[in-house]
Image (cartoon, rainbow over all chains, first blue to last red; front, side, top):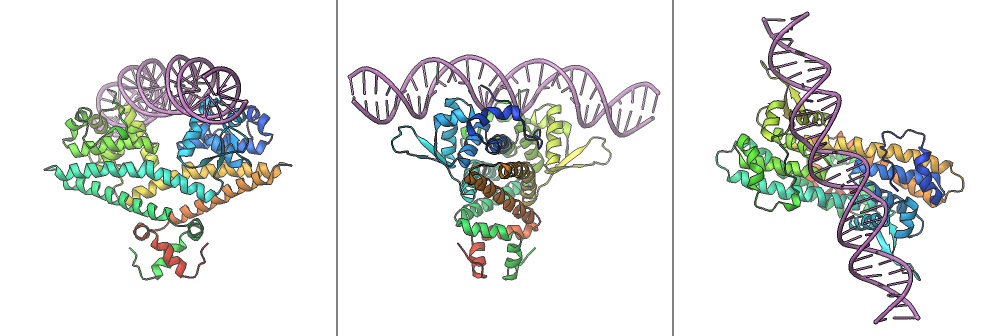
Length: 205
Length: 205
DNA sequence: CGGATATTTCTGTATAGACAGAAATTAGTT
DNA sequence: AACTAATTTCTGTCTATACAGAAATATCCG
C-alpha cells in the first residue's frame, strides 16, 4: 500500500481524515496519528524521508518499545522499509535496540529527552554537513594557494569561508560537550548572554 | 548538456579533471572551478540543489556582478535553470540584484561576508524548518489536550517537544539580532561562555 | 541438524525533483 | 505601437530516491 504524498503547506487546521484512518485503526488515538503524519511530512522539509520520520515519531510517543513488525503494521508500510529506516535511526542514535525478555524479536525505543534528541541531530548534521565541507574547502584553498596568477580576492574569499567553517566546527564540538541542563539555561537566556559577556570586559565591534 | 552526478564521498584528493574542463574553459582557474564543483555537490548534503549551490559559489568568488547569461555559460547549464535558481537564491537573500549602468540585463552579486551568509542561511532554515514544525506541534498538542482518555505520557511528550521548539525559536530569533562581530566573539569563545556564565551566579544542573 | 521465525538484502516499480529546450511573457528603445 | 532583447513559465525527459514484495540470510529452538 502506497501512502498519499501530502505536503505540510496543504494541510489546514482540519486534519484530512481519509489519509489518517489507516494509522488510526491501530493507534486508537487521533492526536497521536496526527502527530505521526505531520511529523513524517515535516521530515521532508528536514531532508529526512517520511518513513524514517514517522517511525521516530511513533517511537517517540510510544510508552513501550515496539518491534519491527508492529511498526510496519501500525504505520502501514513494508517490513523491509521499516528495517532500513530503523537502521538509519540507529545511525543517528535517535533510537536504540532494547531486548524484551521472553521475546526473540528486536524491540526499539526512542530517545525521549528532547535535548538529547537535539544533541544527536546536531551531532549528525555536523558530521554530514560541516565535516565534509571542511575537507572540500581545505582542498580548494590548497589549490588556490598553489595557483599562480589567481586573483587574490578569490583566495581571500575561500580563506574566509575556511576560517568560518573552522570556527563553527570547534564551536559546535565544544557546545556538544556542554551538559544539557547548562545548554538549556544558555538557550533560555538568549541574547542576554551577549550582554553579560560584554560586561565582563570583552570588547564589541 | 547534462552534468555527471558525483558525490562528495567519491571525490578523493585528486580532482576529476574530466568533469572539470567545461567550467575551466570559461573560468580560467582550476581552483575556482574546483570550489564551484565541490560546493555544488555539497549542496546535495545540504538539501540545496546543485545548480543553486554552484551559482552561489560562482557569485561568491566573483569579483564583479554577473548576468544570467554569463552564469549559464560559465556553468554550462540552461538559461531557464539559472533563472529559477537565481530566484531561489534571492529568496534566501544570499544574492542580490544589482543594476549595471548602461546594461539592460539584470546582474547579480553574492553576499560575501561569511557571517552574513551564515545569518541568512540560519534565518531561512528557521523559517522553513522550525516555524512550520511549531505550527504542526501546536495543532497536535491542542488535539491531544482535547482527547479524552489519551495516555498522559503521550501528551507530556508532545508538550516537551513543543516547549523545546519554543525555546529554540525565541533563542534563534534573539541570536539573529545580535551583531555579527559579537556573535563571532561568542563563537570563538566556545564553551568558555558556559564557564563564565556559571560564575555569574546562575545555577547549573 | 532441521525447522521455524525474525531480519536483511536484493530487485523492480513508481514518484518527485532536476533540468533542458521551447514557448510565452515582459520590458525597453526608437 | 512595433521591434528587439531579456526573462520567466511551461512541457517533456531523465535521474535519484522511496518503497513494496520477494528472495536470501541469519538466529534460535527442539
